[in-house]
Structures are given as C-alpha cells and as structure tokens.
Image 1 (cartoon, one colour):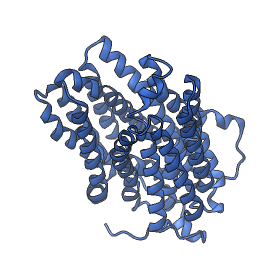
Image 2 (cartoon, one colour):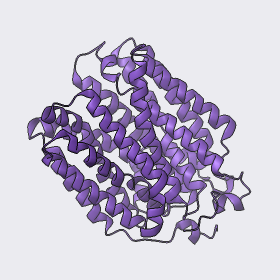
Image 3 (cartoon, one colour):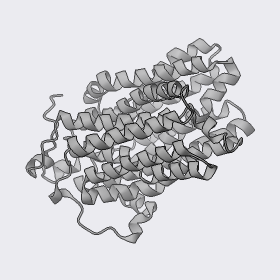
Length: 416
C-alpha cells in the first residue's frame, strides 16, 4: 500500500503544525520511556514492599492500586485531552508519573508505597493520550503502521526496563524508582520543547466537562454505544484478561514444572520482547496492508490461543523458547489492528475519550486477570489458567468474526 504522509488531513486542513516523522519519533520516545519506567521496578518491587510487609498480597497490591486508579482516571483524562489538546495532558501525566516514582523511592511506610502507585495511576494518561496523538496525526491508511509503535515500545521497554532495574538494584533497591523518575523527567522536557499539539482547536470537543464525566462507566457507555464499537471493546477486554492472567502465573508455572532458574526466565522475557519489537518494526504494517486489520486480529487471537494451550503439553524447558517466540510474534499484531479498527469508528474530537476507555478497560482486566488466574492456579490446578486463557482468546477470535469493516469516520466527515 502506498503511504501518503504522516500528517492527518484534519491537521493539514486546520493549518496545525505539520506532525511528521519527528512527532512520531518523539511520541515513540515518550511511550518507550513510560514502559521502561513501568518495568524497571519489576525486579525490585517485592524487596521494596518486604521492608514493611512479608505478605505476598501486599506486593500484588502495588499493581492492583495502580490499575484501579487508571480505571477511574483514564477516561476522564481522555475527555480532557479532547477539550484542551493532547500536549497539556501528556505533560501533566508524565510529570505525575515522575512524582509517583520519587515517592516510591523515598518510601518510609507501606501506605506511602501505595500512595505512590495511586498518584501514578491517577495521572497515568501517558500511553492512552499518546495513542490519541497517533490517531490525530495519522490517516486511516497509516494507522496500522503508526499504532504498531505502541507494540514496539512495549517490546523494547520490556527488554530494557527489567534489565536496567536489575543492574541498578546492585546500587540500591531504591535506585530503579529514581531512575524511572528521571526517565519521566526527560520525557517531560521532550514533550515541552519538541512535541507540537496534534489536535487543532476547531476539532476539539467544546462542551464543558461535567461531574458525571468523572464516572468511568459513563465514558465506557458512550463509546460502547457507537456502531460496531461494543464488540471491539469486548474483544479487547477478553484479550487483556487472558494476557494479564496467563502472564501472572506463567513464571511460577515454569519454575514448578521445569525448575527454571531466574536467568532462564529472563532470557524468555528478552526473546519475547525482541520478537515483538522486530515484528512491529518490519512485518506488522506490510502484513496488515495485505490481509486487513480484521483478518490479522483474528489470526493473532487464534495463534495466541493455540500457543497458550501448547504451553501445558511441553515436555522440556528448551521448547518454551520457540513457542515463546511464536506466541510473541502473533501477539504483535493485536495492538495495531484493534487500535486501528476502533480509531476508525470515532471522530477526531473523540480519540482521547476512546483511548482513555481502552486504557481503563485494560487496567480493569489487569486487576481481574491476575487475581483470577492466581486463585485458579492455587485452588483448581496449575494448568487451569492456561486452559481458561485459551478459551477466552478463542472466544475473542469468534467475536471478531462479527466485526464489520467500515469506512473510517474521518473520511465520512469529509476532512480528507
């Protein structure tokens, strides 16, 4: 497919600054710093919490509090970005993350750790606002390629973050938290000095924010009622439920079944991250251009279901490496395809709300997924989360069959 320009027609017609490859590069940098900051504390989070509590539940509460706060805050931040623009919300969100990481590093009590994750979750519109920014500056034809940057940021971020966190932990357990704050600070500088606004004033939502807008269910309901959107939201929820649930227990499953060592698990994580990053950079856009978003989304979900199921049957640890690479490869298609299909169904002034709703629902699933998978692992059978994850992914693929390809709303509105 012949690519036009990285500037959206809406932005061009409004006389907005020309969002070119430089803008996409800066947005990618911001997303990468965000994912590295999020994952850099993975290796040390249990040790930070254990200063104040030995309960494993308290470790998981760091994730649960962050995700729950995002569920309530992300839709409101999305609505806000539709009114004031993406750039101010990005600045406030990334700055809030920096404050949260500093508080996490300072510590002093368990409630302070929880407060740090609450602040980061409430202000955590980083990735959702960045997604809306990408939608703003991309034509419908360019969206699969440009949304692939999200998966690429996750791929590289989950390689660099845990590795950097492990190295910095040699200096101090608190050092990764301060490093995450520093990375967020660098992002704030990049956004302030280098990133132009992507949403022209005439394409913003001008109605005032009401108190009811603070209710995430209102935003979710508004987006879900749009033609074709309800199914896509459910598919996204099912994918995130299975993804977060299986990921929460796969490490302990591997340790128990194969007596795997930390370095072996680390290599598994690195290979998955490298595979996902390579897929996003080299293959996703070309493949989606040839076969379409819907087909590749179904392919991704079916592939993940198969590889999740096969995990239970592997007789030797080394077989996890090729299986992990294949699973990461097919998973790499899901973010760009679902993101494009959803973004094509809403107006430019609603992209922030959509991104906020997607972030909120993903956060909610990252609460229920790990909690449910952990309980099933402990009280039913260690292989049960994988079987359930397979069924959930298969159900998502079946739902995708009902999704109808539609002309992007932007084109219908005559902004091209």
